[in-house]
Length: 372
Ligand SMILES: NC(=O)c1ccc[n+]([C@@H]2O[C@H](COP(=O)([O-])OP(=O)(O)OC[C@H]3O[C@@H](n4cnc5c(N)ncnc54)[C@H](OP(=O)(O)O)[C@@H]3O)[C@@H](O)[C@H]2O)c1
Ligand SMILES: [Zn+2]
Ligand SMILES: [Zn+2]
Image (cartoon, rainbow, N blue to C red):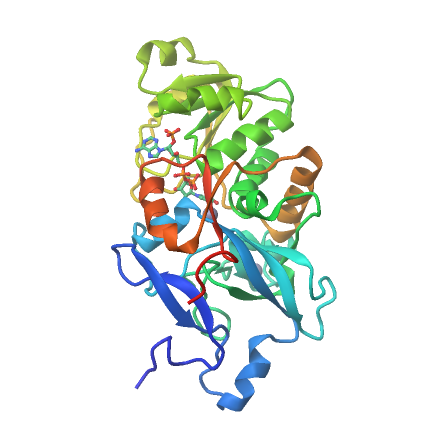
């Protein structure tokens, strides 16, 4: 008979898991990299393999993808699931082939922990588009074991998928860069959205959106936030540095802004109309979709055809570009605005995240959370 995840493992990891689509998280004991067909005395050697780094987790950001996953919004959650893919921690063990990191180094782990390394995408440093890419949680590792994320006290990850965390970046406010940061930086580079003086619209002012405002300003763009939350206006301008703020439910202001934007980054997590956003774009404007609503959106074709507009998408970034992004953030002083919580507060945080009530990313302080 198959053993439960709690029974399988010689070495315990402690984390918080959701067990069903209520999404409620609770304490969960498990291990990583258990190889079921090996005798138990060999487990230890296989946990931190020759190319692996073991990391004591210090901070983990709470991405809306974590919420989609615990609620099974996308229909492919396998429970129990331990979310978390914005992880900062300290190296506690290295395999014998590891040369990028040593014990005591501060490192980051993001959305992926594996890929095939041989396909065209992997060879172009685009592991994030590898058909065999392995997500940090809710996936299967090469050896068939489940991956569990950073709402836990320990990670084991192959060196290639671990990032050097720049000295200048704080661990707590820097953690969200590992998903939110690279998710914004990569498409801005790829779609050529970095030309100083151009006008960027940021749709949805949450974890991704507020970081998009900061990158936009760092690249010298004019930035307008397009939001459903009028209460976020003052902060968006005074604190985050946006140039202007549009409430999407205000028809007069939306109309006045028609045809003024060169690019829009859409980070909205729920189903929403695209016609107003396409209307805001100039001729040749680009609308880049990053949010992952649970149902397909309707795409009006007339504004695309008659304005030669483009709609694209993008999924996080490869390891090389993620390192480049972290170094860019260290140089330009870009971090997330965070609300630090303890693990025990995660269910309340998730409820608030569902209501777009976070300024602007929850980050879990693992070291100061109850450990059992
Ligand atoms: N492409 C990728 O690689 C990638 C990576 C990470 C996350 N994601 C996805 O990106 C989305 C955003 O993630 P996040 O962590 O930034 O989430 P978040 O912090 O919850 O921000 C999403 C924002 O969308 C707006 N919004 C929410 N519901 C809305 C609705 N019904 N209509 C209009 N606007 C609404 C809200 O902004 P306002 O209050 O300003 O309206 C909210 O703050 C999620 O779907 C997530 O899964 C994608
Ligand atoms: Zn994420
Ligand atoms: Zn590959």
